[in-house]
Amino acid sequence: MSSDKNIPSDEDFARASAALRKRSRGLSQVRDRILERFQSSGKLHEFFILDSSEKSFRAYVFYRWERQIKKAEESGLAIKIENAVFHELKNVGRGDRNTIHLEIEFDSHESVEQNYHGDYYSRLH
Image (tube, helix red, strand yellow):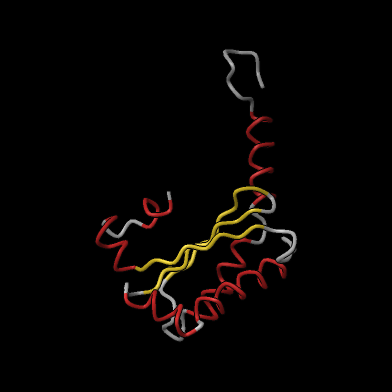
């Protein structure tokens, strides 16, 4: 870090940016593949995946309606989505079930509309 009032240098910013890109590598592909697989059938409204560390992830599955959350659990859809997320993380080289930690939250677009005025960014943070 630059000693000039502790202001990061351009090199500091470049290193931090490269580290963030490396840490989040492959996650956009995971998101795209999950949406491609489950959104077109109307089973899924939105999906996000974020990393907490190199081997720790949090996935957010959003159905359209609140009532779909329980139905997805009962029908086995929720576990199919979870398995697909593990599969896609492995495909992009992030590890398998034995080497990564994955937490999944199931929610609905309806809930985001009601509680966050439709703002997914606020819901995720």
